[in-house]
Structures are given as structure tokens and as C-alpha cells.
Amino acid sequence: MDNADGATRHDHLVDGEAGQLFVREVRAISDESAATPLLLIHGARVPGIPSFDLPVPGGSLAADLARGGRPVFIGDLRGYGGSARMPEMAGDPADSAPLVRVPEAARDIRAMVAWIQGQTGAKRVSLLGWATGGMWCGYYAASMPETVDRLVLYNSLYRSPGHPSLGAGSGLEDAARPGQFDAAGYGGFRYNTAASLLAAWDSSLPADDPDSWRDPAVAAAYVEAALASDETSAEREPPSFRAPVGALEDSYYQATGRQLYDASLIEYPTLVIAGGRDFWSQPVDREALAAHLCHAPEVRVHVIEDGTHFIHLDRAKAGRDEFLRVLGEFLG
Image (cartoon, rainbow, N blue to C red; front, side, top):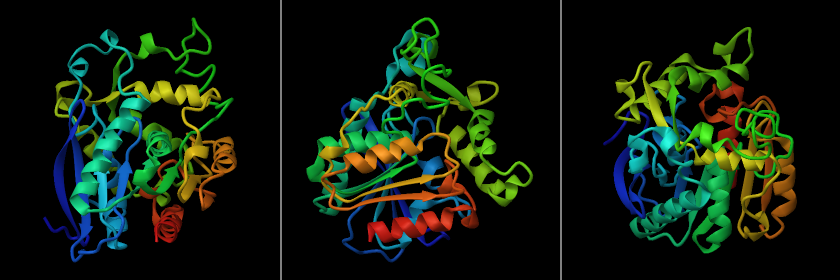
């Protein structure tokens, strides 16, 4: 259907190894181009639509990029949003190990990329991964280079020893086994409330005037869409949506200095973009990526000085305009 923001949206279900995967296609209304498709991949908790396609001004990165002249696709990994949930997610989180670790995520991305190739006739697909989505995309791109055109790693971990909030000594660590993720404490998945979504975002905004940095309408739409992404949210009080925990385990190990993929295997243009106020990625991640991307024909590292973890959802003057400009220049 056509939307007032100048983009059309079509929702699809794609066959994956663990069930069907949700993919939304976003195009400019008049788009009939053969430009390289772009696949957007969400992070550890919030699925694709709340992350990239909110129905409020300044809330849809997908529509902004589609109007720039390329077909855009938004994917949900297994266990997230509109994609199939594993049977374990119908039970108690304590009854399963952390669900959806990086190899499974990469196989879901492969299924989406193959489907996009079939739909569009494109030989290669560009990828943008936000936060943990960047880790998933990087892992996939290093193992399937023949399918990737360009790669964007946005506020993503890579190798971050001494991370202040995700690594050793953090709430992700097993207190009885230092150096290990607290798998027993977290279980297979977790419930996320509205309050848990905004706390980290709030902490990175100017305390005296947060509304100057983030439009309250965007924040409200983000929370509403995240809760609506799980049909069971309203069954709990307060309402909460489910998200797999495997991404947190992988992130913990990256935040203690381990690498989950080798960026030297990436052989196509790569943009590493981050916010100076980001609580997730660190300067050491960008430094290691810049050093390891030795076979990429083009490497850009761009830091938006006052950008938060949510640059693409902040106000234009708070880094969003700069983010869109840099993306547009890189993607071409």
C-alpha cells in the first residue's frame, strides 16, 4: 500500500531453516529501479519494524533510504517480531539455553538474501546491521562474501576488551564463573517492558532537555511497535515482548575481548559508523575493524560526535541528518 511518506510497503514470509522469516519490502512509490537492494537487520531485542519503519515523521530509516533510490528490505531473525518463534519461547525461559546465537542468525540472513536475490534479480545485496545486527551481518558477510555488495556496521561491537557495561563484572557475567556468560540466569529468552526500552536511550540524552534530542512521538511509536511485535505482550503485566538471549551471550564474549568473526575476510566496501554517545560500541571496536578490514577496497570510519545509540531515531539536528548523509554517500 502507498503511504503518506512517499514509500510503499509489502510484507512477505520467507522460508528459513527454522520456520518462516518476516521481511518487509519498502520502496519509493515511483521506484522501478534496478539499484542494489539493501537489507536492514535489527539488534538484540527490538525487531525490524520498530527499529527501522515507525509510522511517524523521522521514524522510518527504511523510507528515507528507499526515497534515495534503492529497494529496502527489513528482516526479522527467527524468534523476533513477525518471524517464527522457537517452541522453547512458549515455555519458561529457564528451561532452555540462550536462543539464536550468531551461526543461526547468519543462516537466517542467508535465507533473506537468497530470497531478495530471487525477487530482484540482484547478484549482490548490501547489508546494514544495527548494534548486534552489525555483528550478525559482519559474521555473515565474512562467510558469504560473494553475496554482499556493501556493508554498514552501525554502533556495533567487534572486539571490545574491558567494556564497561557488557563485559567482565557486568550483569551479563556469571558471578560464580567469572569469564562466562550467565546462561542459567538469563535462560533462552527474556521479557522486555516499555520501561526497559527507554532507560539506556534516556541516559545518553541531555538531562536538562531530552526532548530537544529525541521527538517524544518517535519514542512513543518505538515502544508501541516493539510491544505490538509480540502477540503475547498483553498477556503479561506490565506488557512485555519476548526476545532471544543468544545475542547477549555473543555480545558478552565480544565485550570481554573475543572476536566472533575475522574482518580480514571482508572484500567489499565497508562503512563503520557510530555515535560518540553510544553505550554499546566502543572506540576500540572501530580501531580493530579499521585495522582488520585490510582486504576491503574501501573502508570508512565515521563517528557522529554527539550521536547516541539511536541516531537514526533521534532528531535531525542530533545526528540523524548527518547519519543519512553519510549513508547516502556510501551506498551511492
